[in-house]
Image (cartoon, rainbow, N blue to C red; front, side, top):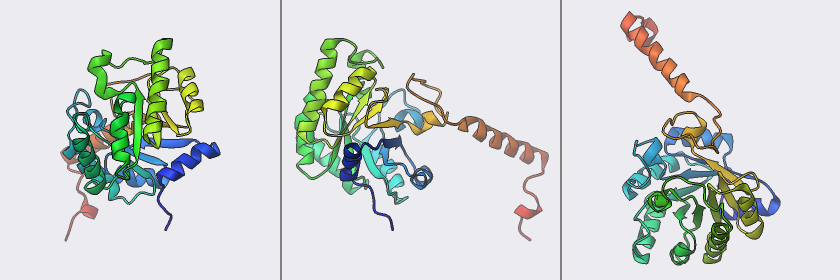
Length: 267
């Protein structure tokens, strides 16, 4: 049996110059496929609120939803590192609640680590959760839970003042004990600058090619989400057309009386 990937393995990949592959994952069959392919990290992202549940954004996602989907992924017994997002209002109110909810994602969900959005303003929270021996992946730049403050999904760090603040955020989460940090929606030169500055791995999503790893939403790379089409997304398949074709063929065979056939029936 191959051993499971740990946060130490992910950190060693940066040290060895090996790029880190990360994809979101929300269910058992997808987790099995991804793990067979050799993905390094599976992220149960609160993006499930948009691509699975149909919400307008990630803000309505609950702890119960996150635990449910994390459990589904973990049942596939992946070798990949399983990281679960802490949803909006599960960690921002006070440290006690943040620790309890982080613990629930580990104990009840089965995740190996949690992800928190925010920089220096979340350093104390990261430190408190890490003190419980729960690994934390940080997330700075374009943070979807902060869309109202940011005025929507806008690239962050274009101005030098913003860039300096994001670099400070990156250093702050590293010093607080985060084992890695997601950089979302920032200029590629800033992504490179932060990656060179930090000793922990950077995982980019719209942060350029110089990050230590990359993450995308699985529904985006499969062409299954039409709500948004960010510049940083690359579509690797048209699963929507594949699924539609199968459904259309099924409907036609049922209407035409050719399914079920003799081979699908019991005598």
